Length: 159
Image 1 (cartoon, helix red, strand yellow):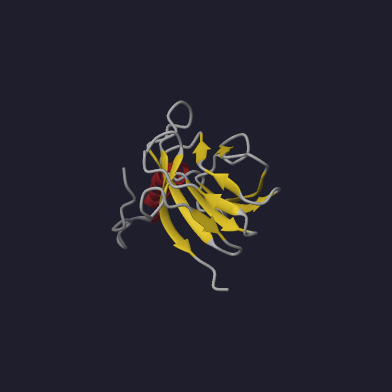
Image 2: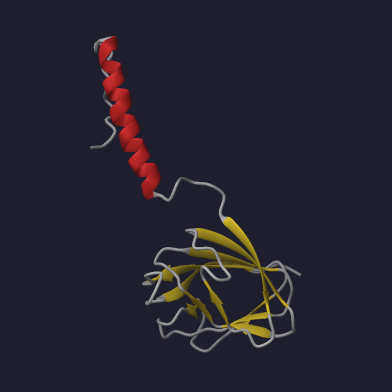
């Protein structure tokens, strides 16, 4: 069933309105559930990459939410992030650089939770303070298949 915009008619009896309300409520609740509970604010997670850390894991360090904002910093200078594991197809991660020490490692292989950016193969991105880059998971199932993270867009901060 879908919500019918042509009903109720102006000539319908008031006694039939309860039926329309119930039908529409059922359909609206189904749609609301399908989009993951609605259009609430995305989760925010502060991430501080530690020395030698090259991967982030959903449900360990990150949220399994459909959209999440990551405030990215490092504990030690010059850390590189190359994979995000445990992703589900369609999840979105918005990364905001809060310092100048995070490098995102480009890999066009398309598996293992790798980052696939809008850049030539092998060209990494050292995100600077206030840079924003957004990825969507392609092909992940949330457990055994990580898929890959495709760049949707980036906004580089002006110094």
